[in-house]
Amino acid sequence: RCGYVAIVGRPNVGKSTLLNHVLQQKISITSRKPQTTRHNMLGIKTEGPNQIIFVDTPGMHLNHSKAINRYMNRSANTAVKDVDAVIFVVDKLHWTEEDEMVIKRLENNASPVILAINKVDELDDKEALLPHLQALNERVNVAEVVPISALRGHNLDRLEEIVVSYL
Ligand code: GDP
Ligand code: MG
Image (cartoon, rainbow, N blue to C red; front, top):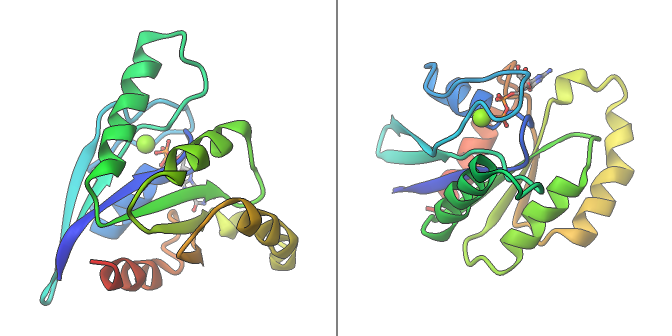
């Protein structure tokens, strides 16, 4: 199987860290500072008969007043249009209006959405995630949910397995 998957979400949720960990290469710049990924970045993972082409996107921003923000939103918007699946990355319990904006953008999108709840390594009480997950579920129409740590590599095999099943 072969296909494209876009990695989307608000700034700083760990999209580029995810791409780099999956490919074991520093393709995208990662940083605590938002807006380090300004262009769509491609990373190709070939494993046995499968090939996944990841498109790492700039974060989607609520603030449209700056030209660079409009440019980054456009890049992310273009990326989600022609892919086989979308990985929507969120930061565990930190849900913001910018996440809501991403959801709205994905609502009318044809490709299936895989919700990746990132940074679970920072969570002491895993059960704290459950009520949050339920609330999320009511708002986002997702095909799959997978808790991950892009930084530590937790559950990334599972995420890849899910992605491949949608190609
Ligand atoms: P992006 O803007 O969505 O591409 O986010 P980045 O990949 O640049 O990551 C933003 C910050 O979050 C960086 O400081 C990363 O090291 C950190 N980060 C990313 N993934 C994880 C994770 O799984 N766990 C923790 N603890 N930090 C993470
Ligand atoms: Mg990035």
